[in-house]
Image 1 (cartoon, rainbow over the protein chains, first blue to last red):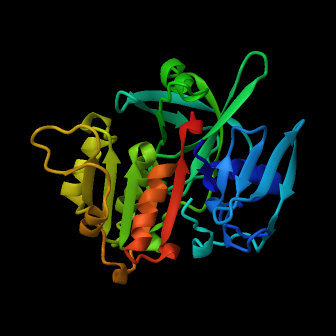
Image 2 (cartoon, rainbow over the protein chains, first blue to last red):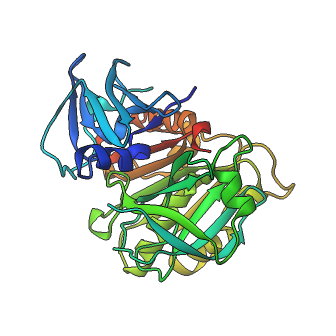
Length: 95
Length: 240
């Protein structure tokens, strides 16, 4: 199945983190690729939301709604929010 | 960010597969061109389905407009297109997203590239460009399967003739005999014809199905465009 990207889960990320997150820069803990969360490859048909690094393909974020409370598993280091400078080239894998 | 019930003012059939909803949310803080709303449907048994839809109206427009593509096996879009009537209420929240956004201050030259209904958020950017009198040079490259699937056709013609925006439509499956535009999928040659040279550092937004976006973004990077000037938004069959 073709993934979506992080733009599609802006609302769910807002629920989980309490802020607009798609422009926030993340660093993949698996491969070190750096880029905005909008560039993550996102699968929404799993139970919950699964996002993979576009460079190495490893799972870097899982969001599950546990009876109204968002549970987050993160394998990303998040830099300061509110990044509006645009994409960082390295997280733009070719899919 | 709270959920709210927006009143459906009007439905407009744009193409055989796409319908626009004109909505009146009671509490709307305004949006930036390219942002989304989340739409939520709740069944009688409490089951909920939620989707994110791009906003088609510009920030300066009086009314909030979404254009929905009906996906036959979708959970949400068939309801929005087939069942919703003026006067109904639709639960939504927004705006959400901040990455795939163009504002006048973002500047240009601006190349917008759409695959199918990926043109929806780009329409908001085009309207924002016109409404604010932005002096950025703007071109739109729009890939559609056939002419009757081209969204906002008359508006695009007017953007071209009245506002100097370069509009290029590529038809991939069927075209009229006298079709003067591009025939077939977007190619490096077509991108070379439509885009600015990479040395002019165009700002590029690509929105469409995942495979389309990967393909076009890859071609642009191969041609020497700076990946940091390319913003992408993907949707797919799970968007239903």
